[in-house]
Length: 113
Length: 115
Image (cartoon, rainbow over all chains, first blue to last red; front, side, top):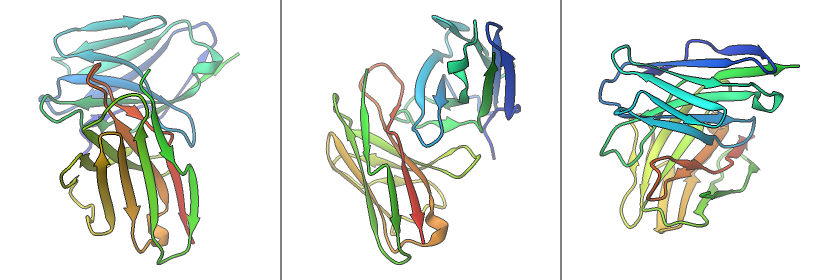
């Protein structure tokens, strides 16, 4: 049972444009959501997170939006840069689980020149 | 930022042998560390939660006698793959969390190949 889903396995965006990566979840107990970036043969790198008490969190070029009623979150990257090309995972956790994360399946972002 | 170091980054071993992977939190103490496994083109799957000073908590379907976890100190957890088989070949990643923020930091992973 995949509780966190990223339905787009890949995304290609032109440099300078906006990249939008989507994530859906099914477990309403999740109350904290994170986005990670991963290069091949490396561990994931934390990008940005959002608590369920918020609907938006912004950090530089990265913004995460949370729609609790739809159980949907998205990561916006603007402007996209070639160095952003990587696999992006969304992850979710719930209070009281010591940060145990459930990961989505990942979306490979390619930023083209 | 918080740093998690994982060693070795790559290991090749023969079937039937055991392999130990170390995970260290370099600039913070971690009472809890997590071990994940990633198969090619798949998501990261949590294997177990490593608790300092007590037994690890394993996810359903993960054999605790095969994947031995020892959280000897607040900065070190080890995963030992015992009697390795080719199907154990995978990418193993550890993670830990400082007190704040509420975000896991990951090691760079260990690519295990069992021949």
